[in-house]
Length: 391
Image (tube, rainbow, N blue to C red; front, side, top):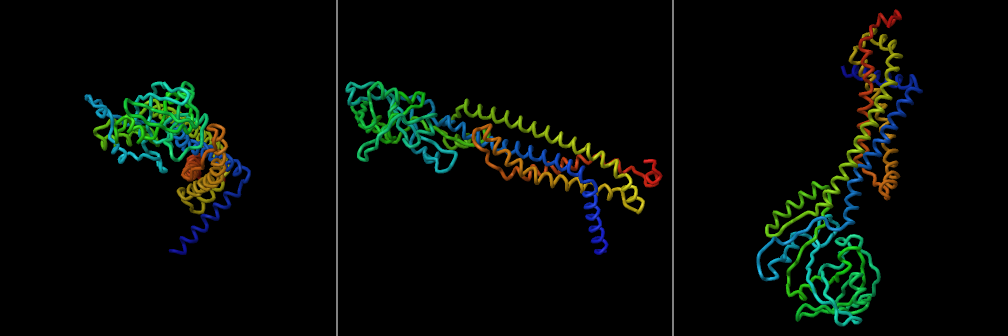
């Protein structure tokens, strides 16, 4: 019994090889159609997967996309409208390679004076982690800077404030809040095109001393990565951990990201569907001609005792092998093609995603098998009619 099955299997693959080599020109046309369809499919799918990461990184350039703020509490003390610094044990205060972290801020108003403007002027003082300003202030850039002095407290002045006070990098700025006075070395003048241009940025602990609010924060700005749904889930989980604070997403960022990604994803998905449909129609047309040419072969197979199911299995196996060959070659070409398309669309080359390759190959094989539908008409072929020339 085992020898009989081995013989049948050997004969099966022998016939498949003969079928594949019977009409090489038509075989090449079908292989070309399947390969082209697989290439375009793989390229678009890779762009679709990479678009999620690309949009996330692009939107992060606009700064934080959520905040943790104190709830509206009635109280006369300044600390009643601030957060406890212990909140940073729940929200990581530094990136450390993660896409979910918080940056603490303490805001106050103080009189800022410079060597060139002794009277000074009121300005918003922002206490934070100075090395993370690029994450919270979109488009921030250093207009001018000076080598820092290790013995002095460093600070950064907004370009508008520096212009009004004639404050230059290397100067010492004096900040006064009532009787509390702090001095800092201006390490640089920065510009962001926003409210930060009129502020001065201090280390968090120095701002807390100046405000007389040790261990307190005004707000924690969050940088949350992921899809819009993942961002909402993370913020919901954080809100449960911080019942005394209010966790709010910045809607124009999260909703804008969701809308753009959904539109891009929908457009690419529809294009992939159209490409696969056109590929299927092209292969189906070729398969129709194959069905007409192989009536004599099918009649002979049936005449010597071949079952209809086994005969159709031969042609389906042929179609599957064509789809596999076209998918393997075309998907590889498509992934490399997506690198160039990504650079043209996003300005940065798309990163190849390995998950796209088996998906594109699988879709191509499915299209090839479904395109073999015209071969079903071979099931109705009668050997006697074929041999008499009637079919």
